[in-house]
Image (cartoon, rainbow, N blue to C red; front, side):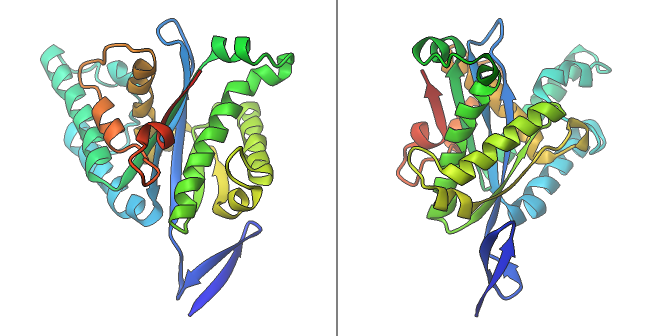
Length: 265
């Protein structure tokens, strides 16, 4: 018999003692810089129990094998410092092993990848906002709407519910993103109604980097390959590009460059 659980103002169906499938979306961002012209927001989403019982243990097993413990936090741009104690050949081997570990999880676990790229200069020139204050968070707002729309597309197609984890930047930035998240739930998006957005989306939270969150560490490795793709740049050695594209959400109609990987302007 189906029972109902009220959570955060939403009614969630339960079967026995179990809530119907919940998904976790882990997101990070990469700002435009001297190398990349696009702001990127992206990451992975995965069913909650699969994440807890398969993805996290697999990541910990890889960390133990490569680094000797599970306490090290993996961030792509910090690998040089993380592996600094190793000699040259050993460092190369360890670096490759880390990329192979992330690739293994993306390919062999039941996860989906997503990423949105927005060219800042093109956005401002084609769609000037006239508001300095709004422009501070504009890239985040646009990217988040697209990500949430496609995430909820999946959730609704699969009669599921989802939470979001976004790596914390600072209190003010987290607060602004939370406000935008709540606005998306309240008002919907271009293609999805507020009823669907509000029904399918649960909470958003902002773990710290030091929290050693497995999902956010995987999300961090999504961004550089996609930034290079959006700028038509050659991929780096050990690139996860092919794995990311292969596991990108495709809307159930083999359209992964529409629902999973999206370039704006």
